[in-house]
Amino acid sequence: CCAMLTLCLFAAPGQASTPADAPAPAEAGAAMTESERVDASLASDLKSGLQKQRLRGLDEHGDSITIMAVGEAGVGKTTLFSNLFLRDLSGPPGPTLAILEQTVHFDLDGVPFSAKLVDTPGYGDLLDLRRTFALATNYLDACFARSLAQERAIRRSATEAATQNLGVDVILYFFAPHRAKAIDYAFLRRLQGRAPIVPVLAKGDTMTSEELAAFRELVVAELEKHKIAVAHPPVCIITATDLESRRDSRGRRYPWGNALSERPGSPHAELPALRRFLLIDGLASLKAASREHYESFRRQALWRSHVGVKPLARTLLPPAPVLLALIALPQTRRWLHRHLAPALLYQARAVRGAVGGRVRLPRPLRGKGAPRPAPQKTPPPPPRRR
Image 1 (tube, rainbow, N blue to C red):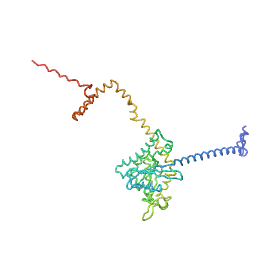
Image 2 (image 1 turned 120 degrees about the vertical axis):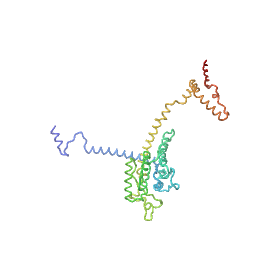
Image 3 (image 1 turned 135 degrees about the horizontal axis):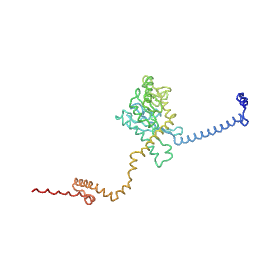
Image 4 (image 1 turned 90 degrees about the vertical axis):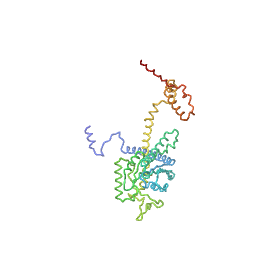
């Protein structure tokens, strides 16, 4: 046996012995190839079927995105919306003093697509910074609360459930050029956890290449320092004022030259990269992150509705029928009559005296049945001394 084992171990590869019942290499390879062919065919059919069903649902319901612009006043938040979708979406002239909503509808070869654009007042337009913060955060919380109310509704159609909008999908936070102030990061901390955030370096045409590189590094470092999570690294943009011109010439015109807003490969003009991330490459990830934020809000809201002062009061306080039954008991009525009737009688007589006696007292407060104070006994005079 040892000799046979040694012979098998040191035999040449072509002379290695094989068990008698083992299949031939050609037959095993053929069987494995056939199995793999069946699995590959089934996987291809499943993938094709799933894609067709998804496309059918996409054709019926379409898709959407909700974008919110936040930042300092005068950095071009409203203008960016027009540049993203190549439409004039400018609102009323003057600064934005309230939250403005616009919805843009598209038809992408039969697939409906809508973009809801939320423009917020820039801090600096309102004198109270706390009100500026509250406008944005309250809007985001109201969107979540509305979605939760729709989810808890008794009657809700399947279409409403499938196309439910959970809130804002992405927040574009605008940094003014050359500087990032402490208020920016305070604002970002308020917004964090309510929607994905994408930092935007506005007005890239006002910075040189060295200034832009240093400013970008500063923003990234400060975001990490303040532990603010972002969905995409900071992007620098140049917004065009003339949307009718061609893409290769669209931008801002100066006496010394043109600052193109969609120049490929330029670190100053990353508008095409931002558009592609929002609408093509990152739309699914943004919606998934928005869903996570909504689930966190939902979990906290349901917890507060079951645990807290109000739920505890609802549990401990007796319901209305029990209170009515207690009031109907003779002992309870005597106690109320003894303790409350004198005070009510005093107040009623005071009101009657104030209006000149023209008010008729109710029957329970006319003195009949109400306990009268006990007469005070006059002490006897002291004995006379003789």
